[in-house]
Length: 307
Image 1 (spheres, rainbow, N blue to C red):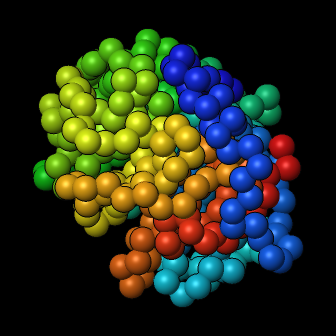
Image 2 (image 1 turned 90 degrees about the vertical axis):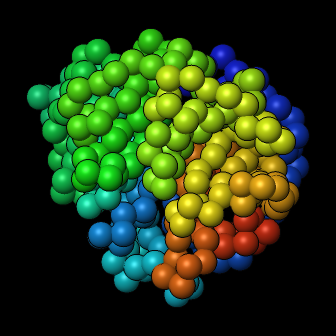
Image 3 (image 1 turned 90 degrees about the horizontal axis):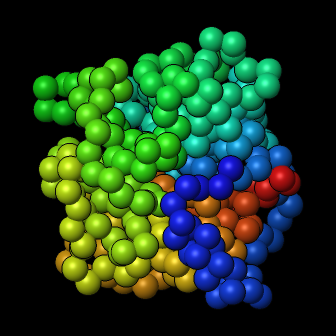
């Protein structure tokens, strides 16, 4: 499903022109293929060791045993090939993995999915690793195209969501049960800061923006490249992102460094901190879903995308 923000089409067109003929990081061995469709989100669950892809065709568990020991919990995902979890075919738009292994998602149900889910889904939650989903709130009302969740000092879970139906940022301080409507903004990606739960970042056609008031107002991040996708590094040490030309960037919050290029139009990106503190980046692009520990200079293809 196409994103609602108008600048996404522009960004995709720029990427397609800029990256024609780019073939960095091609796999040297046969890798599995899966009919993922469009990949809307990627996430790693430290509790289960599972690496997930949220797609137009359900939520998939990805094989990671081919990665070196610095990637966490390969043994938990020694599945050989991507596996659709629970047989669900929902168009999983927004997706995030919260502390404690809770998965949150939004989007639209598949034709043979649970009859008790709304369309749009609103906010749904899984506590059994995506095998089943329950409605939390806003069923039949909101289609969140992006989600993130961070713990609050008192133990509650704050959930940020981009409501693509209304074009606004929503925030919940009780795990998604009740929501406050905040800034009206057209964004492609958002990322909340676990070290400062009031701070949330957004990629937009007007640049890379930050809010320090729970998404009520946003200001430009000075000196930042025009990021298309972004994630905070898990230790709070900065950012990783890809701009509208497909260039990967990292930042320590003081300066920005160029790295490798993605291939084709990027669909999703997330960071994973390895068992030894090494940063792994997962990217969904024209190669499929790839993993890199050197910001795209070299990659391992976890799966190709067969549609």
